[in-house]
Amino acid sequence: MDISKRLKKIASLADESVIADIGCDHALVCIEALNQHHVQKAYACDLRPGPLEQAKINIAAQGLSDRIFTRLESGIHNLPEDTRQILICGMGGRLIEQILTDDPIGTNVQSMLLSPHKDAAHLRQFLIEQGWRIEKEWMVEDGHFYPILKVVRQTPEDSVIREDLLKDQESLLLGFHPEADEDYFRYLDWQTELWTNIAAKIPDPANKQTLLDQIQLANHRKQVLQGK
Image: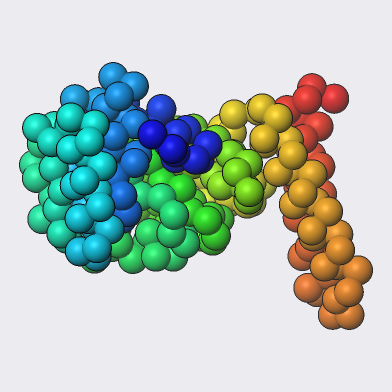
């Protein structure tokens, strides 16, 4: 099955018995997650009938029609109660926030894997404010840089330090507990170069300083992770 590096990574991180992939497109992540034996059952959810029909074809071709069930639904509306983990990828951070806001997440859901293609810092802040802890992050370079966040419910101890987490501008911007691999270091270099080029063209001192501060945070993050 032809699957991108990003989707393959997301599938490898799915670690609950029953998952629901929101905006599943062709159900590639669900199929890969079950084929990797991390997951026993999956719901492939999409609001578009066309991609969902193709998902059914892909699922049947893999012999998984008795374990992956398609659902024509918008967002996380009316998810089955046995869902233990929600996956949302391929959307902007603000749209993911909207999906998580529109419908309540049942206590049966233990964790989420979220991969915003933009507005990641905004999403991180929202998650912390809403009682989720960002347990780990990965950065995948796959034609672009894609963050993947694994989030779990906050414990009472997490609630105590919530305000400190919301003040951690470096982590809000660059990720909480990232996997320090080659993709992540390339991301830091790419982001630093991008901000440097933009700052050189901005005449407004305040906006320029914001970018310079972000560059400093990226450089600090890289030095800390490399032990310098």
